[in-house]
Image (cartoon, rainbow, N blue to C red; front, side, top):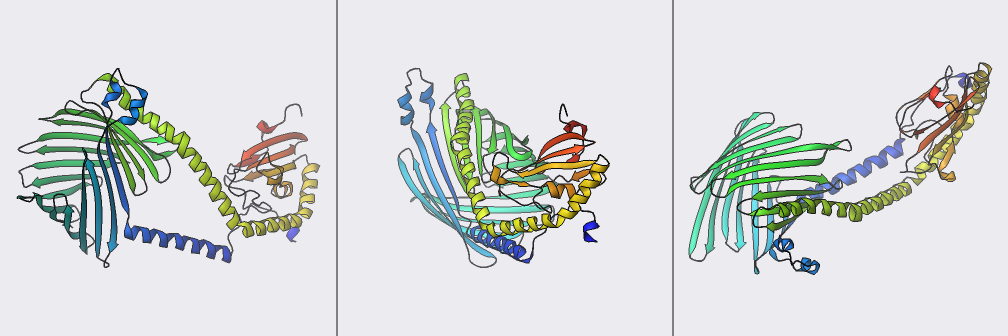
Length: 462
């Protein structure tokens, strides 16, 4: 009776041991992520280079290695949870500015009274010792505030202080209005609007020593079907004392954990400066390159083309080889890990094909008698390698119903009579069939849907 039943597409699920292995693997990954999140190691490296000599007419290639470095900063921070609501943070920074080397160590302890209220005292040792305190509290669902204060000793004879408070309000779901009041009679008001990954920031600062208006727009660009893969940034700032400043640039995801960003800023006060940021996980590397003290076309050209050159070099010389090697290593490791499971799938598929043979002959005879759909030959796997192909003629023929064969738009590995001969590699399905005594042929990718017969599959001259 079972042999008389019709076959249908059925994807195989995981057994109990496979479910347990997958669960244990996920739990291990969660524990590793929690341990890293608890310590939260963060590092930052910043370098400022004066490249204005590149624009001189007497510039030589060997001078590129002698570009002056104005400043070099390395910072490393780590968190240490003390209790469920209290954590300590230590930040160590080494600074070399114009051949003057200094070191700073900052330690803070943050205590969270509630999930929306915390207080953080801190102490800074080294150059310009400082005592500080910061706090934050969400007053209502829409209103929040923060405060900060610092007591600084820039030299043994002077002690200065500073303080400020910020009041903010969530106007809508993606709009935040903030006003910051400083002890030096400076007031800064800003509004931020974020919609569908687009972000617009507008701020105005009014004080005794500064008046500044800033507008910044960050917008994603669809690349390869991903909206967060690339962002375009543009900004306009106007300072009463320093004059206007225009900035434009973009950031691009290199890998799942790396991103490269570049912003070129043109200012009457500081000239043409390129800001490069390479982020890798919780580590960032910043390069500020000064091309010219004044705004001139050749400096803008250098500043615009240099990030493109850097990205191309990283992409072709570092990123692509790294991703290719990592993909091969991951595939080999996964295949080794699943070798026993893949072997069981192979044996299970062969057993299923053996059970299908009687039904296969009946369906073939029935389809031939009425000039219907007969699968002459079907191969599944990686084409170009004979040992990575499996014959799936019998499983596909058993899925033929009323001279029609329909497969869903998903991988065929889990179908009855199919198995994975080459884990991690791109597979295809080739079907050569006869319909109304006319030969047809089609080749599809693994996750494509299949609907036959079709007129477009007809072999010319048959």
